[in-house]
Length: 164
Image (cartoon, rainbow, N blue to C red; front, side, top):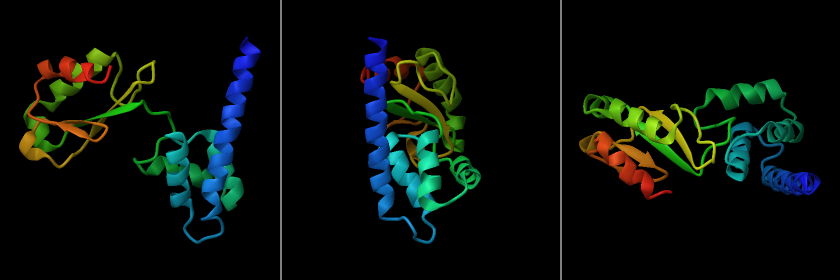
């Protein structure tokens, strides 16, 4: 049974790598292709796995060290898998003053993870951000693209139930 699982996983990985290679075809050989390539790879995988970065290195003829330098510099790129739902807690000035740290701590406690981590089941990734741009609704969190404002830590369990 274990060999069947490995076989299926390897087939899925191969299919995903082929899709990633197709995504790179249009930008191969163009000036400044690295960042668009990383965006395309991340759209395929949801993050930037090592095997995909090696593919970018080969296809674009860019040293892997340069690729890692760019991928780790920009906060948009992730070298680790993200959860199905991304929870962003605004820690900008307005949100922070109105208790965003308490919201972050409650989320961390409810999910059983620290900020910057993903739950074991892959359902949630918890991250802090500097400003969501909804200061009038402070404190604010965003789950995927949905904004929740004027929160207290008591609101967190109810909000999380919407996604479980």
